[in-house]
Image: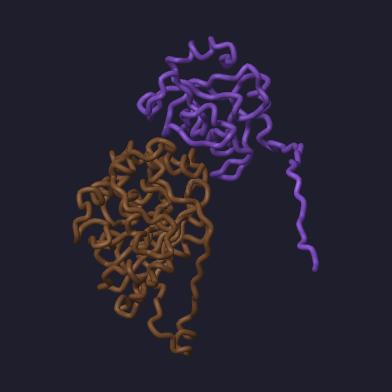
Length: 164
Length: 263
């Protein structure tokens, strides 16, 4: 009689270290990390200001120049997130929205935090301002937006600071 | 991720048109989960009420769990043939594709001036209806059913408007006021049944296969082969609708007809 084959399994994990480049958008992340500045790009031909930045204009395909933008803006549309990936689970519930920075012609998708988070607080037309983490890695999660009237109280917290 | 990109469009649409409300969206969930009860291939058949939807777990405001489709894995297939081949093989009861429309809009929602409107839907619908010899403003009375891309309940309401069934701002009241009243609205026995199969909310959303499923469902309906969820076919025409890509930037609409519908 042939003994029935039984395999022995060991549970293990593979850790992968890797790097990826932000390519032509690198300056945006470097400026956020080092200088707490928000940079968009401006088309050299039609003059449209893109935020998030594009290395080439999405309308006329011409190259763009870097331009520093204001850190205040207006909410175009928003939602409050209650279900998310593991990276953001501790922040639930939090707001996200498309924000048109003053001087930009396209809107940036970014987190909107509030001490009193209700839909009316972050609805269309509300003014917001960028707040930065003190510890920055050059990622989108280095900064977020808060209602303009909450700005002072957010930047007085030990882990955050205002932009330049 | 998908929920938050659709919710941006739905919230922007609400800001502009005051519709759809949370209750109106919940009606879509009730309708499509309910329609799925009659479809043996569906994965989320449910008999639920508007209150059940409103009380389900919030995902991202104002979408609740029951407003969202179930992400699924499945396959679907269509057999396409030229007119010559259909005649050569003597295919009985073929369903003809009489109109096709496809359009793209900005992939990045932040580029869009009107975030509450999916222009790709409007352009694709107009192109498909034109090819089929139908009219955008009269389409509701020219077809028997529509299989729509209802990945999220609110998006189906907006599609009623963008595909020309009702004027902008009236999609929500179309489904809400005519709640389970025969002869009106998008219900199974309504004036234009939408997603009689259960749609993506009722059947499950196997991304990539769902557009084929919707088209196949509409074809089955036109052939009279849909089984328990068969709706009444009088004009002999139906449409299927699918959207996808980042910010649902791509839209495609197919108009189909049986022998009657070709007249």
